[in-house]
Length: 452
Ligand code: TYD
Ligand code: MG
Image 1: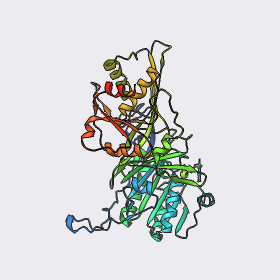
Image 2 (image 1 turned 90 degrees about the horizontal axis):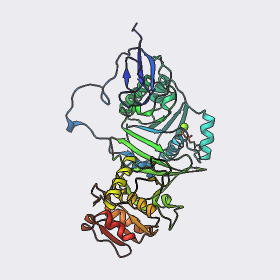
Image 3 (image 1 turned 180 degrees about the horizontal axis):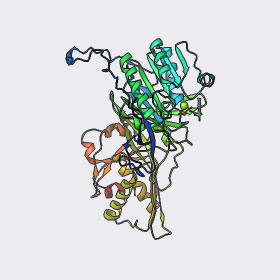
Image 4 (image 1 turned 180 degrees about the vertical axis):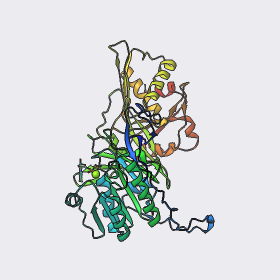
C-alpha cells in the first residue's frame, strides 16, 4: 500500500510546502496553510480527446468546435467570448450569495429551451430547494436534469449514462473523491475533482461549469487553486448592498478577458443590464464640487462612471488618503502631479476618492477624471454636470491619448452630455459631431482652465 504523506497547502493559491508556513511565499497571504494527508494516486490520465496517444498533424485535426452554444443571455455570451465552447471547462467564482447558482440556473433555462440536454448537479441544495428557486425564476423545462450528489464516482457514472451537452457542478467545494483522504473542499480534493471533471469534459465533449465560492475562512480552498486547470475563469462580483452584479472574465482560452457582463438582481432572478452607463450614473448629484463623470472602457464597451472626491483639511499630522474602486497608488501619484504641476497644497489635506456604484476600475483613462474631481473638491467649485472627462495623465502633467476615444464620446453623447474634455492627440483620428462640444487638451492645466 502506498505511503500516506502529509503536505501543507495554501488555501488561497494552492502553493505546496513540506512544512507549515505563516505566510505563503506565492500569494503573500498570512495564515492560509492547512495540513492535508495525501495518498499518491496512480496516474491514469489518458490524452484529452483522443484514445490513441499518437502525434497528429495539425491539419488533420477535425474542427468541430467553432460551434459555440449560445446561452441567449447576451451579457454572459459576451463574457464567454460568444457562447459556450463545446467541451470547455468554465469556473464561475464569487462570494457566497452573490448569485452564481441563480445565474447558472437561468442559463440552464435558456439552454433547455434550445433543446440542449443540461445536467445540474448540486451539492449544496436539495432537489426541493432547487425547484423552489426554479419556480421563482419561471423555469419549467423537460431537458433540465437535476441531481443532488457529492460523490464524484457516482457523478461520473451518471454523466456517462446521460451524456448531457452542458453540466453544472454547484459547487466544487462540496464534491469529493473517495480515494482521497482529506475532507471535501480541501486543496487536494478540489484539485483532483477538477482534474476528473476536466477529463470528463474534454473526453466526452461536455461543456462544464464549475461553481467555486470565494471564502476567507477555515479549510475551504478558494477558486484560485483551480484557475490554472480550467479554460475560462469568470468572477461574479458586486456590492452586497447594491442590486447589480458584474460578471468579469479573468482568464479565457477562447476569447477576450476584459469583457464584463452587467446584471441586476431582481425578485425574479438576474436581469441583463443593456446600458450600464445609465445604471452607474443614477442618483448622481448635480452641481456639487468633487463629482465628475468619466468614461472607462470595459472590453469593447464604453461605460460612464462617476468619480467622486472629497478633500478636507486634515486633523492629524498624517493626512489620510483612501481610494475606493480604483488603484490607491495611482491616486497618490495623481495628487503628486497636482501638487507639483499646479501648486495645489494637498499635503495638509485628507483625500478620499471613490468610483460611485461600487465598481472597480483600473484603467488609466480615468486619470483625468480623478484629477478633475480632486481639483474640483479642493477649490470647492462644481464642474458642470453635463461634462465628461477622460484621458491618461503622465508624470509631467501631460494628457496622453487613450484607445477607442471615439466610442467613449459617442457613449457620452448618447447619454446627453454636451461637453467633453479629452486628450488632444485623440482628436487627430476622428471628427466629433455637433451635438457635443469637444475640447482637446495637452496637459492638466489646460483641462482645468476649461472648467474654471
Ligand atoms: P445564489 O444564486 O444562491 O448565490 P450563490 O449561488 O452565489 O451562493 O443567490 C442567492 C441570493 O440571490 C440570495 O441572497 C437571494 C437573491 N435572489 C434574489 O434576489 N432574487 C431571486 O430571484 C433569486 C433566485 C435570488
Ligand atoms: Mg449557490
